[in-house]
Length: 391
Image 1 (cartoon, rainbow, N blue to C red):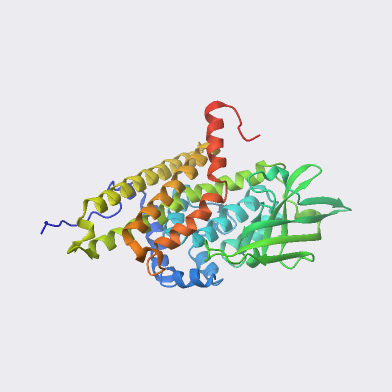
Image 2 (cartoon, rainbow, N blue to C red):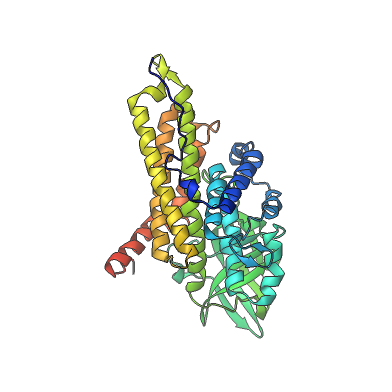
């Protein structure tokens, strides 16, 4: 029998040694919460297509909602601490990471960045505490990758606004207390705050999903919704507003998918060390070890890319094109790792007894949302050539 040695784990390069003490504390806190509160239940939530709303105030108590924002009850942590949080949440499930990143980067960030003081004081403290949930209404049934063609429109009506249209594929939509909705106006695209229960504002959940099942995904409908004049975000006009929010959320994805990939690698490694075929552990076969070795190499490259982008972001130097590169590359890497891990688990890899197929299915959604792989590819191509290929 071949002699065995002690396994090294999934951080062979000791990348987490580069984290500060505070960042490692965040890592350990979120990892423990995920292990205690999420992992024992998430397969059942995924199978049932549910997400317990009571998780939200628990996340708020940990300081994870809007944690990279300052003031108004927000934790004011750095970009890397936020990235680590996304990584550890997505190691549990992409849907739970989506809840955190949509709340902080897509709902709270535009209020924090472009809202009035009255809007900030009204919403951000409650949202950071998890007492109020937000959603981000940009994508429409006929306009996904090209938001400039949106049909949702807001028109002046006396001192207020009339909002009409619909949004699609909105995370947290039906459980949100406040929707940040982007609409076309005579001045250009503007953001509006639409509270839950506003007359003419309705939601409908999207069912029969085979991905992100432990997450709420909804349609939003606005039937001549009357809003006061101060419902508009005063600090931005044009696509710069929603696109800047998407850059914030995409940064979380760059980190988050490395958590899903790590979970798949660790599951496949554990399985390979115990599963026997032909009278020996399958982890002792060269083909299996080759798969595991390349999965680890790809994962560590993705983690290094996330760490580098985090440092650029904290230095105020990160660009949208750099985040596009990170999102495009790391999501593809994570999907490849999940699929390879599934082959090591064989038929067991398609059951919810193991996390691999759940992560693989979830990552198919992550590949598409907040900029498809194709759009990010073209953004990088334009950065290289100076020529826009999609206009």
